Amino acid sequence: MLFNIQDLQRLNYNDTLKIQQDLQQQVAINRVNDHLIFVEHDHVYTLGKNANSNNILNDKCNVVKTNRGGDVTYHGPGQIVIYPIFNLKKKNIGVKTYVKKIEEVIKLTLADFKIDSHVPYKETGVWTNNKKIASIGIHVSRGITMHGLAINVSTDLSFFDHIVSCGIEGVEMTSIEKELGKKIPMNDIKTTVTKYFNQLF
Image (cartoon, rainbow, N blue to C red):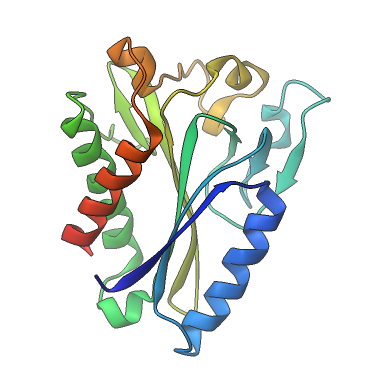
């Protein structure tokens, strides 16, 4: 394994962001190895750097502006968020390849739980049955990544009703639990995601 795993369990978005920023600096100067962070956040909506604030439909939402790509999304309990802090130069891969590999990690993970998924042309994230099940939003500085991916495991999908998710009109969100009709332990998802990050990175 060429990266360390840090499972933060449940932590608010801002505290997690500080951890990411610190690790990004440490990885950049070769003080620590690459990291893979797992976390579930408290309820929060995040805006990407080019997001349209009109895509937030409820002025009571707790909103954090970020420097990641993408538009607005929701994070909360039951959603596993994964933040790779990777040195892409050392891995000798470009940003587009990196995103493709993340998409593949998600698709392979879902396939292990008998969910067929795909990445639509000109859309972001990973979809199943015309519904979005996972989102991707990254930032790369000096070849070091931060932010990452979010997979809806047993998420309360009603929280997506307060936004135009990812800036896509009419998008319907789904979760692993909704697709399978049963709960899957979060640790099972973490183990599977880790397996495919190891394979692909």
